Length: 517
Image (cartoon, rainbow, N blue to C red):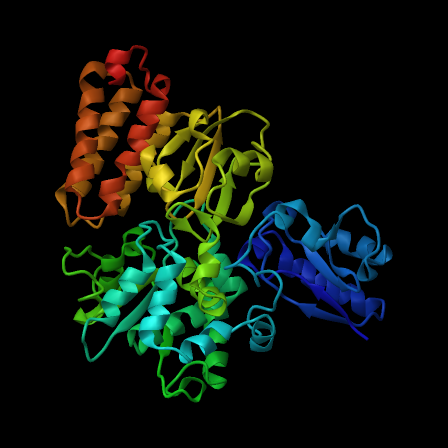
């Protein structure tokens, strides 16, 4: 009887040596005449422990990590294939506190199953949501999603049900579903982890969306920097077609939905939905004027649902368990769970899925373990490169869309990047303007010109030149960007710049309140 060993195929784990460890385990097992079954699962998201090996035992899966090739022989010597004791032993995987305290709904299978095994997916409640969706009306599917309180997990937090309802009720000979998988925000990787670790859940979510609104064709717009995700998605899509979960007659229902992956070319602006659609149409990625909204006139001028990976991957459990089940997680108008990605200067970086309501302080210290350097955490940027920098005085803010809006911050895609007290916030503000300058599509003047001038003004401030003149000028430029930009790239660049200026004036050489204002 073979022993099942799990080693992640997640690209972060691979970068840390998972493929070499897997090869070493196979070689060592053959050398010792031990029969094993090697499963390349997704990562559990405990990145400081990767590569993490798991062994299927009678008591459950036992974990060891972080494992390097030099550790493999000693693991076999310690009889790790039967759960033996070793310095790298972590106990039962499900009992690791970092994992045990989570509420995994969207990520329920990630790290547990073989990502591209349809049988594995089906044996862990996969496609239950689609089967339920095929048994009810389109309006009822949309109602379930609306009742769940699901909002866009890409950053805008727009209610998903309202978007779907608009597309459903817009007459057209063709409709589309687009998954925005152009995950470009700093410190974010939940989309990648889903696509590499459980691609079928995204495929199922998009199929349900297509059936709900009457769309027959879907595109996953994937950033070209994700080759492992591309391979996993295409493999899973092929298996879904072969087994009747995609195509002209889904599960003999008479419903049709086709799906393909399209690669972006590395432009951050193509994470904006209208720029993304221009790119999909084969044009330069320029932002479109709105209205018309994509839900009415989107891809090729047809009604289009554009949702982020996590939004669509959350749909199957809603259709499986019901909208009310999902709505029971969270707080206020922020319902369900959010995959939170801890990055930056933290001892324990990784992915955590929890219901809305946990505070930043709990995330940074109870999960992140404080800074990796042992120094005080000075600032946290939440929501990617366009998110505000939050000082320690705001660490008790709960993760909730409205709570963050109240302190002029955004949750965005759930990325949390920590900085210790050695960070220069004036330099971080300059970087934000530089990022906007580099990534601007150039269509609107505030973003194209304002970011360039803004970077120059911050450089003057850093050099201590005419603070009485340049501080008000920077604020004025930010006001123009905020109110005059065509999309969120220019419109949100003031968030990191002004938050750095407001919360850390000393880093800008400001010593009196008059200059700070």
